Image (cartoon, rainbow over all chains, first blue to last red):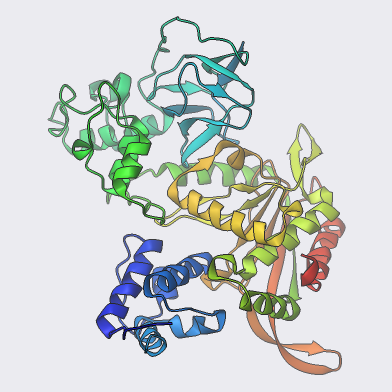
Length: 85
Length: 422
């Protein structure tokens, strides 16, 4: 499915872009702070965030993966692992 | 000949400001077409016509504030040619009640304020400027002689989206419109952030409206409250199985299931779906669920999801997402603000376990869903861990008794136990 490794910086940038698609003026919280709580994302916001993240990175995201997208750190780890060639 | 008049977009609305025309003389319109954008205290609202016809004349210019019921445009019969009569401009009041209230709060004499909106209308911003710098005749940034012609709503949207109006391409004689601003803002799918008010803003129009409507509710409506706990295990299992096969854009969230269940229950118990008017209950024509949406930056709006009981579940989900996006982006439609027959509030995402709401008059009930939590739960004679939600009803005791409200909650519970029929 994928052809190149998504490094940490690229994953981080993708998460930030996906968040700002939902909350345009979002100030990203610290790496280990839950995104939903900090940015007050409701379930529809979170679904939109996941949609943007999947589109930006090309990584398919199942509903069972949602818990892995809780914080910036966990998102970066998830995207890095799923994006290996 | 028909007339398009300033609509009433809420129980407390007495007047509104026309922000922008979406049609012009000669345009053919059909019932339900969006024809104008009107400013209310809560939002800029796209309003539709209730007649078919051809726009003959526009009677009111953007920026003008008029009372509810004032003719805004003349519609000719379909097929008729527009009359050559020039556009007449209604006498423009200088400001709105909200601005007058703000001026009173800040101790600003409106007679000394220079209005910057079209027709010299005084805006809240003008009042704040005057309060901040009483010695100045007018804010230095204003240069009306050289400023681009911009419709008021386009100007506000530009400020919200950070679009530089001067940088937009000029079109001969045409003012900058909302479409131009949106195009310049780029293809963002996200709603514009609600602009934060300046630090010492004493009166927020949204707060003032909520204060007025909720005070009226608590003054007039004898509320009673019921609550029950609903086992969501079957509903959520069904939803997760269904989501496995679906692309992201079509996946469901629990809120969609809860909304649909509330809509079906309202059809079953129509006594909670409708209005209290002239001393009696008037049933709603259809189940139009008001969906309480919290806005970023504060405030609340509850636009209607029309015919929610008749929508297939995927349409409820799509409608919910669309409504929330537009509510937060300030692009709701008039019908959505006036036709809700029963409001549903879901505070579960905020971590709240139960919500006992305040009814939005003239409706007669409000349904509340809390957070889905895992709890010990008796299943037969065994104890299990199940996802459950606290479901509440605030209802108007003039219209129903607790027995009827109880039937409604029982119906929601029963419907959620058969998710495949949602």
